[in-house]
Structure formats: C-alpha cells, structure tokens
Image (cartoon, rainbow, N blue to C red):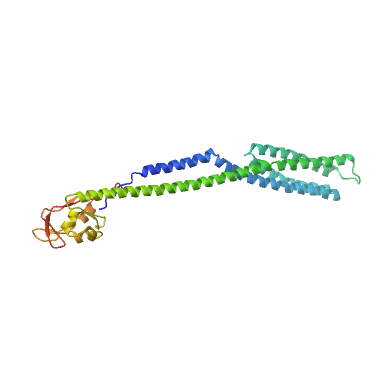
Length: 312
C-alpha cells in the first residue's frame, strides 16, 4: 500500500487564511465601508425625492397663472389641494430618508417650513384675491410674498443636493474600496492555496525520498502495493527473489510477480494482500511457504503483510 503522510502545514495555512480574512473585515470596519455604502444608497433614494418634489411645486405655480386668467377660485383650490397632497407624500418619504444625515435632515425641515408658508400664501390668494378688475397694492404685496416663499423653498430644496451628492460620491468610493479589498482577499487566498500545494508537494516528495531510501536499505525483501493490489514499491532484495525489476513489476498485480505455494503439497497459497485489505490487520503466512521466482528458482520464505494507513 502507499505510505501517505498528512500535510503538517495545513493548520498553518488555515491560520494564515483566517488572518487574511480578519484583516479584510477589519479594513471594512476601519474605513466604515458598510455605513458609507448604506449612506450612499439612502442618498440616491433621497435625491430622487428631492427631484420629484419640484414637479408639484411647479404645477402649483402654473396653477396660480391659470387662476389669474380665470379667477375660478373653487377649481384653483381643488387643484391646489391635489398637488399639495402629492407634495406632502413626497415630503413624508423625504423626511424619513433624510434622518440618516443630520445636516440633510435640518435642511429638509427648513424646506418644509418654507414650503408650508408658501402653500398657505397660495391658498389665501386663491380665496381672497383677484375678485376685482384692478389689483391693489395689498394684493401685489401678497403675490410678492408668495413668490419669495417659493424662491426660499426652492433654494433650501436645492441646498440639500450638496450633502446628497457628497454622500453618493463617498458611497461609491466605499463600494470601490470594498471591491478592491475583496479582489485582494481572493488573490491572497489563491496564493495561499498555491503555496500550500507547493509546500505540501515538496514535503511529500522529501518524505517519499526518505521512504525510498529506508526501503532500499532494509535487508529483507519488501514490496508495497496500493489498495487494488498493484505494486508501487519494491526494494532490491525483493527484485532478486522474484526475478522482476521494479520497472517490470510496477503497476502489476502482486499475484503476477509474487507467486507462492505450499512447500509440501505444491498447492498455490492465496495472496495475502486481499486478506489485509479485507481485515485491515497484519496477516502472516505459514512457515512452509515457497516463493517461485520468474526464472523458476524456489525460495523458502517466511513473510507477512501489513496495512500502512494514513491519519484519515
């Protein structure tokens, strides 16, 4: 049977791989990668709400121009409430998302305040102004105040783009850092596997060489096989007794080169390898066993067969 030694560097390679993974995780949290990526995603959602908020506001401003032509306050108020409901839904989502960033949250609350003042001005105008042919200075002031609140609301709304774009950019950088770190980890683990395999191959080759030297130095005939009974090693003494060189015997069934029979009866003796493989323990032959060499020479032998096991 093959004598297979376990690779002693497995624990060391495993510890090295675990260390690399721990460094990867440490880098992620040291650079605050998960939080930055999450903030970037929330910023992308928030800026969509910011852009969506402009649509109902512009619709309400257009409604004001239509009202000045028709003076239909009932229709104007109805449409105002409709567009304001859309805006309120967007504001509610925008406020909820903006909580991740204190700076942005303050800006959104300031925007809500300006927007609310503007809507109140618009509603009051639709209810009280424009019912006469002439426009009084008082009405002009209300129009001006409403426009100023609109400009203030749009200005504060636009101010939210600064922290949002900053968070989106930072989130993208964090994702790039995480990707680079992940690639580096994969390369690191791949190199560990390659080095482990090379080191294991060198160790195995060195041990195979030591085993070969030990086998050749033994004064008794020694033959080893694999689990299928095929010859894998053979020392010079065994070659001399069987009449087969290792080159001739390698890979052949043991029964082909190791022909044994009972010395007294001449009956063939069963191959001990099969019994070893079945029982997994040392098997000895009777003392009256004769080995018949390739050239017909007969040698009285006393032998035994034993399994060589790995740790697996």
